[in-house]
Length: 621
Image (cartoon, rainbow, N blue to C red; front, top):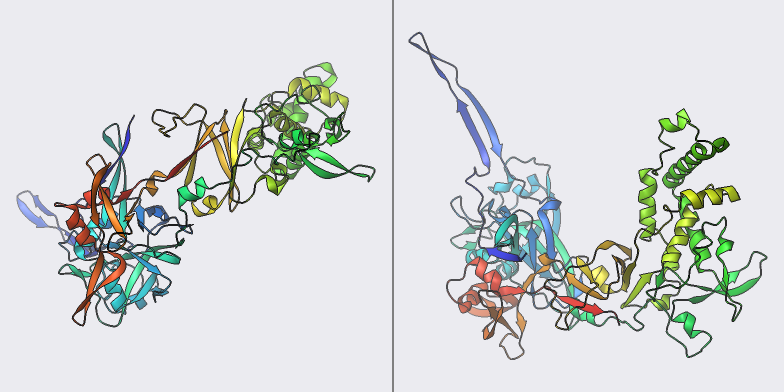
């Protein structure tokens, strides 16, 4: 099934009443036995008003560059995607007969003197240019909105003309198997490129009713006020890497969660298997050094495990001693003890599991017979199926939920800054973790025997094989919309994923601001890191030989780049005191559209300005 993205120039809503106050009058004429009898007319007033001073959170699907991101965005025309395809045309930027969009996206940087305030609608209505603003109709005077105050001359350099406003707004439809699936998004673009080495702030502003004769009417005064509906900030690094650059530079040596070998035959076999020497205080207060490894194993097979020992009554039963050097391996004992502590910390799990386990054992073994206990059956405690809260909690534990980070990565050198590491989950470590959680109420040898016979399935690992990776990078904090797909089949060298089905992914966990844990059911050999499809963005191409340093490569009807076909990117020119000068970083959208060729609709302009979603493939070595 082929998925495509279709660009549509506009999606005007069905004919509707404009914002305002209306009166409807209902009168009924009756004829009774040939005589006309009038019924008193009834009039009612009502107000049509959309809340155009703010957008609901669900109205904004995504923004690009991502909010709070840090990267090389110098070639990007920022944009915002709105969840309702008709939204930009539900008001008008011009008079009542105009189909001009009422939304514009303006970009400011650190040097722009923009005053941002939260004002009541009564205060806003008193500002120049807002007396008849349509979004004020039907709203209370004490309602509040974010208002920008922009110097008149600076706004003249940034605000698009009416023709440009139309070109910078379009609709994006998802097409499946040649048919639109009904889901569509509206996109509003900015005409300004971010400045390298600066922090930029984008504001989606209302320009409802502010355009006259094809140009924005700033009203009177040296400062022009606009209502800001959505804003976000991002930073543009000077010649810095973008998403792909950061991903491709990730440290992958070693490729797994382990410490590098040190050239010592007695130590290296342990280090390459993910072991770390850690201080260990014995019960008699003696101190030694023991080996420990977490659940993130560098090897596909973790080797022999303690299956013949489980279940156990205490963690000490899982301690192992290396006969070659006499060092203790505390890995599985630590996992068991951690599982027990996590179970005790969860009151919901420990209570539900304890009651169910006790009741079930009584029902099976009281006096050697199945004993019906009315009270227990009334609460369903003797049900062979554990309570839902127990099953859900154990499923989360299978996915390492709530396992502390130092148990996963016992040495910070195993995951340095800007690195990526593959791993396989050690099934025996997970089994010991689960057995520790299920050990609540296990005191006597009889308890151990009962658990071995009746609760073995409960302590089994949910997935036969789980693999994944850890990433510690600015990608996690700077690109919150990053997606990761895993593949267990060979991927062509050219990275073509057509026809390949991604593996089943377990919910990813963000362990800290810049650390992400991803798990896949199966043996993931290839990872595909990419941004969400909605981050398909718009931009221009760097060309040091072009007059402004930028050009735009054009595309054919299929969306592919035309070889050798490009147009220059020129800056908008503003005339002051009889002299025309360029406004750097602000694209002359009208001139660019003219160079692309006639006719240029908003849909075609969007297609020509599109930039692909960045993605990177990683293969496990």
